[in-house]
Image: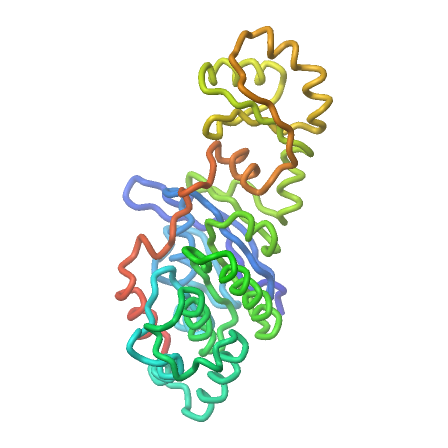
Length: 334
């Protein structure tokens, strides 16, 4: 038995002459929380759509739960669940009825469905509101119900698209508490995308950053932060940015532009400034402020892609017709 829930080897996807995915390879361990990050056009959406069998690869191979995504598509679909960013609940039904309807569509025996629904509503903190109509739920409650519904078929891998987008901090914290609990209690692997870099940094076991059809770096959040240096020096500059970038590059470092700032990863920020500030000052560049900080996951993203994440994260639901996509999965899983 393999220790991996997902194994991807040199996966490629072309759309005519456009190489959307240029041969990515990675593995996702069972029971881990795996975060897949990338800006619009990175190929992240295309990769995920191949893994959930909505797209056929141009080349390469991948297995999900041990099943080949090309030759064993039905088995892949039966072993996964996908919770899209866009809500697909029936707002006029109660939480309980939403789960029972889902169970009926998937052919789950009624008694089994009731037992599993109770367990999942307990797990997601919604049992007391099981007979409330969804239209009266908050955004966080709806998100938890979507996750509960996704788990109703007992998947081995749960794909979550932006699980906390648009939620208040309290709801975000509760969602992550439930995601962590689910990954342990349900013995499940979670593959997610997220705009919330602080959340990914805190909760994901492994992070893959993708850009221009390629995976630029992969590892734990701590490993990725260590890869760009112990400190990040930030220069606030509103003009002559290119000149400052050129000066820093001549010193042997690779700076990046981040809004009004030029940032550079270094081993020791204080030593860097002590040794280099005179050389930088002699370039007569109007620097408004300088600060030294520890690197964040957003700094890692900037280092490897040359841009901040900001609103660049693409939802993999944005590229497909949501209702149609869900119907295709429902029709072909059983």
